Image 1: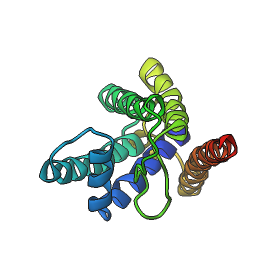
Image 2 (image 1 turned 45 degrees about the horizontal axis):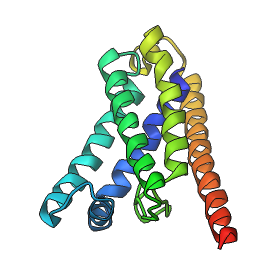
Image 3 (image 1 turned 180 degrees about the vertical axis):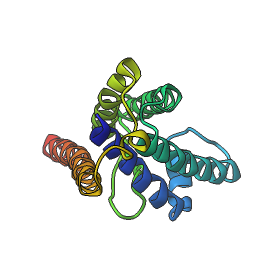
Length: 178
């Protein structure tokens, strides 16, 4: 489970940093979705969101065996699902800026699927109290540690590609419906 927890951590790290470098776009998406009404508050919310994602990422990468890290991640991902669900039920087509300007994404089914995958990865950590990387790395050789990190990176890319595929399928379905 360490590899999968690290992959979710890497995903949040990418998401947090890219949001930080596109605060205006993240701020606007929060307004467009109706989560924040005042522009100055939306900028603050966008900064808090990006910083929170980075801290949660570090927690999942280094301390995935800790209950507090995992239960926090669980509730954050649950909130992400609810936000994406709101977009689906209200038929909103709003860029979520989840990965800043690097990857264009919208709120919707892709975000729901991505968040569900991340929750499924976190649940075993909550139930089984897995060993975290910070403890594990003391007992494994550096080559195995590098392999863990590379594997986690590929798992991160896979989660992002699943989301992009769902978004693409959904866009094509919407276009064909018109």
